[in-house]
Image (cartoon, rainbow, N blue to C red; front, side, top):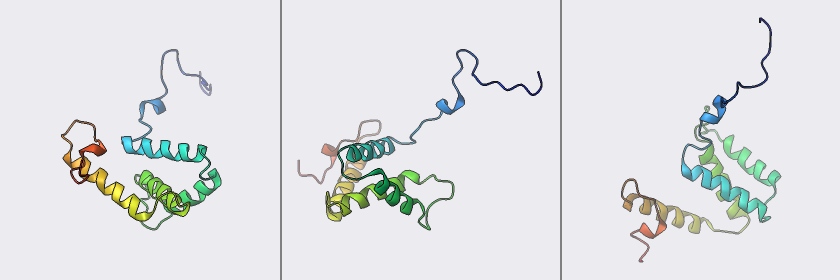
Length: 122
């Protein structure tokens, strides 16, 4: 029937939007979850978060297609951790380097664990 709008999906069909993964990489989901958890603990308000994230995604080097959105998300989270005195830049950088070394030391297909960092002295 021409001009007729269908407002519901046929029985048993899932809308295409649910076929797409929400996060492209597991670290993106973890960064998202950490942000929510830190907000829930009262470290920052949503307006503070929105302000810092907005400044990050408006950086001149931000991709126009948004493929680097979660890189900006992570940078915003790091800035909040620094500004709130939760972690210093050296601590954040050292931990990031440890995860990087652990990733390179982990066999393909195995979970990356911080214990795999060959520089940890464990």
